[in-house]
Length: 255
Image (cartoon, rainbow, N blue to C red; front, side):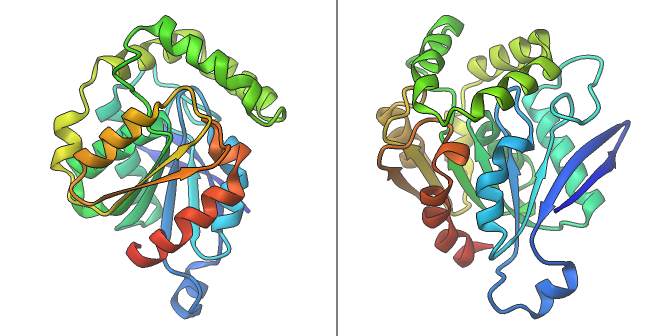
């Protein structure tokens, strides 16, 4: 694993990289391209490591901590979703990624969708894992209840990672980011996207309803839905094998 801090404007973005070197990418037949993992609300790239390790057998997989989260610089104010998307593109410039598959989880799906909408040429395809912002749970307390229902379904080792990352991000930053994400209507944005997209929902995910996963898939011009049996919301950590198995052929075809 390569760990590094990448200058992105006034900030430094902590980045985890797994997979072959750039030279190996040019010669390895089994390696298909570049994938960028985009973490969820309050989290860092740490909890993405289980699926990152599996995908790194076939791809060069990056997991940056978005500004304000994880070990990256904390801007003075919480960045908006479009600002987080633009920061991710600036980070891609800094690490030399002209184009990549974006693999978002939860709130990270919204950031990835903003990137694909604002900078379509930088995205080869999208994987939207547990896409957040189910409009049937518009209030923060409804989201909180869904997350509480999900907690016992996750791998126990996810809890200390989540608590540590939440404390590092801070309640104010998480709250403002959550409120903005819930106030943003993704319908028109999803309709505009022309990228191949794979939507993945865990069968036991109380945060992302089956209705919303179907809705997201149908809004996309080239969307496909996969439901992972028995998987919870945090499928990148708690069900990485099934998730990697579902995503690998899609990424191989489109990155």
